[in-house]
Length: 282
Image (cartoon, rainbow, N blue to C red; front, side, top):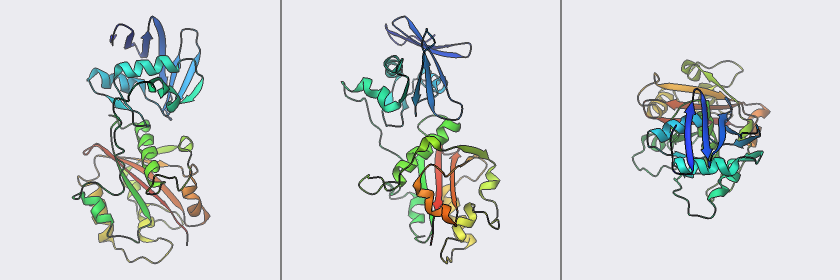
């Protein structure tokens, strides 16, 4: 049991994570393959909050006196989280933005800048500086810092959501491609599969780099240079998910004939994700 203040208790008993708000107990669970927070009240009524949190991870963060940040950029401490749970309970099927309406009448604690940056703010960022020298590369890369303190399926999904929010928009932040990130489904693969040799008829990372829809003169040395900058500590600390590509019209052109790919790669040594996307046509 973790007492937050006079109104809230946030804790775990056996395997059950719960919030007690003014004496009312709410059981907290989550979807194993999608970042949905389930809030079940004492009467068995369940609320689903989409694009939310894994309550076990959140509780562990708060025990370490750390904060967590939602996909909308709002930073939570334990009291904020309990307020959100209490407010959302009983609403049925909602998104995190509805649950966060509880904060509308007070200033947001802090909104962290989106770290999924295509044009790096750091002049010495090795990878982003390097990739600018490959204008014919049809692969889109996006580095996302791991602010959610875990590297499970949900964190990979969240990295993909953050990256697509950046890569699928123009310089003014207007969406260029529509997407429904909730439809994305990922499967963990071996890191060797990410860098596997070119397979006839099937698009993979290596083939997308060397064989775009038009002629390309990039070499194995170029491929190695880019990945050395992207994963400077080697591949032993990498965890890779291969994602479906039916959730955005970004992939429509590639579905015509050339192909599509979508990977999230967590680098344990740097505690960050790299999102790798490709879709093209002639």
